[in-house]
Image (cartoon, rainbow over all chains, first blue to last red; front, side, top):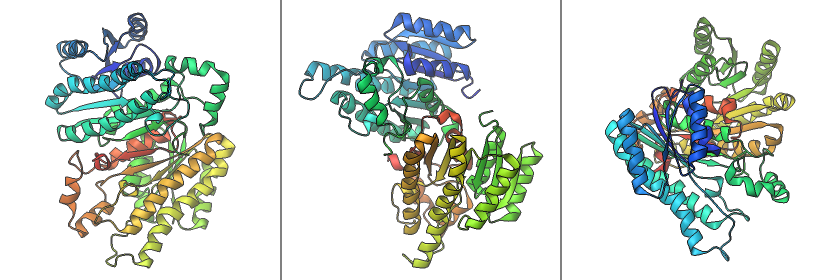
Length: 250
Length: 250
């Protein structure tokens, strides 16, 4: 069991990639805390994990709210005395281009995708630095690397910000043995991409851009996150792990 | 067992990172063919693997020689019927060169580090196409990403070539479900790194560039290779897996 005895907080763990990570982590012996705004779906995921013999708790977490992060951290410390792993997975996007994107929508995406990651790091780091160990995994995107005609500029900017925020945390806290890496999934079969994928023409054009010729599965991202969460990656920090079927390599 | 039923070739498997990869692969259920120019060390690595119950064989392999490759692949296919994984790990540093930009050193480094890599890929690709599956892992370096004052420029260039070659192979063979990725270790506790750093009195300078403040272990790299060799990375191709303690994030 590759995460035996470890404690992980996964934001956006109710569904999609976050739920896949929660299930995989629990199967590898980890105590998982799902933080999400989606109560019902989180409880479904948590109870599925518990039914399979894993350990999983749901806590309400709007990643934009300091108070929520404070609650999550104090729960983890009270219950387990530590947090070994933080997966900043919560994120969103919408339709939009520079010319029609409202400032409110820009700010909303930035708040969740970037400020949410900042707050997660800020609240979890003190316990990790005092424990002299920790692994933070920030979910960015292949669109944090390269531009795409169809994607929301706020989403792209937010994922680029996550990429470099990760390196700041990695360099600053390496001496405390806290690692911080970003994962960059390509298009993945999740609720976030559901609307986009339902447009057949768009889906075909998307798949045409992927050398492997297919969309990724949430589990395929979860395996990469597991690698970065576990001690197998103890010499890995500040890196960008692309899980994109070759999108950025071409 | 994460590599159960898989057959892997590891070049430069007689010592250092290659030996650690062979050991980790075997412990995860793989059958391993160790190729190296050092027959004595290579045989002793294979002896200790088989003594632990693994299925492994040694084949003499000068990666620059097509004849050696043909013999190795031939005996691997005869005995194990297939090749799922190729780890192009053999490499030299050129650190002995006291003359900067010496053409003899340049040719020697390029022959082993990049021509050797290409020959291996050319030999296994047809078999992987038949299988409709395969994972090729090329050992580059953090020196394939950035420069340093104490690295032979031929080493930098060869490792940069490995990086881009990996992407070329990744994109060209993605539709055949053959994945190809590069690993970029920072300074690792091997004889090769020892030569570079001791010869140039640069160990303390190197350590000052590593946020995690330590040299990596061969296991740190072997676990990265394991991840890329296994089906856990089935959506990862054309990626650079950097295992450098944060060197290039800094």
